[in-house]
Length: 376
Image 1 (tube, rainbow, N blue to C red):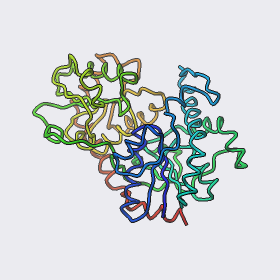
Image 2: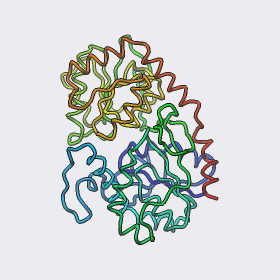
Image 3: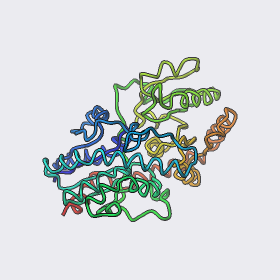
Image 4: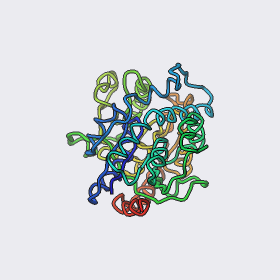
C-alpha cells in the first residue's frame, strides 16, 4: 500500500500521526507525510519522508481570510471554536491542489488525515480513494467541522458536495474512559508519544531526591507565542519549592529560566522525562495531556484555549487531574491545586489506571491491518 498522511501545521500534529505512519513503513508499506513547508524538519526528525503542500504557516491561515484581509482572534469562547475551524478550512483550501497532485503522481491508495485536516477527505474524493480520520488528542469540538465547511464552499461545489465527505474509518487514541458520550464508533489505537528526541542526560531519566514538577505549554513556545504564558506559569509553580522542569524549545530556555530557583529548562522528550515527575502542569494541550496519562502522572490543567476545556473536564471527572480556569490562575490558586494533587495519592492512582487502559489498547502495528481493510 501507498498511504498518504496529512498532518496539521504544528509539531504536535506530526507527533500525533508519526507512530501509525512509522508502523505502516515497518509493515513493509510506503508512507509519506504531507504538511506545511515549515513542518518539514519536524517530519524528517520523526524519521518520515515529508512533502510540503503549502508554503504558508498555520498562523497565516488563522490571521487572514481567503482574500488576505487581517482577522482578529475573538473573545467569545463559542466564536473562538468556529474561528479555529475556519482557519483550518482555509489551510485545507490552500493545501488541496498540491495534495491532490502528490496523491496522483505517487498513486496513493489511501489518505490518512489528522483531526482538522480537512483537505484529506476532499483530496481522497478527488482521487477516488478512501480516507481515514485519525484523532491526535482526546477530542475536538464537532462545531469545528461545520466552521471549516463554511469557508470551503468552492472546493465542495467543485466536487458536487455540500458538506465534507464522511470518513471510511475513524481511528481514536482517546482512552475509553475519557471518550465523550456522543463520540462516533472508532477503531481504537494506543497512544504512543511521538515527540522529538535529543541526546539524553542522566537527570532526564533518573528521578531526583526532591519532588519534581514539569511545566510546559507545548512545542510551539517562542518569544512571540505563549512565552509570557509559560514563564508566568513557571514562576507560579516555582513557589512550591520543588525541583522544576520547564519543557520548552531550547532557543527560549535561558530567558525563561532566569530568576527561577531549582529549574532545568529546554527541550525535553516527554516520553522520557514525564515518568520521573510527580506532577505535570500545562496548557491542557492534547499531546501533553496524553503523554502524562501514558506515563501515569497526575496533571494540573490551565486551558489556554476554550476548546480545551471539555476534554480537561473529562480528565478531572476521572480523578486524574485538577483544572484551574484561565483567568483564575493566580499564584495562590495554582500552588494550592498543586499541593492538593501532590498531597493526595488518589490522583496518581487514577492516573496509573489511565496508563494501564492506554497500554491495553491496540498498538499502531495492529491497526495497520485496519488500514488495509479500509483501502480495499
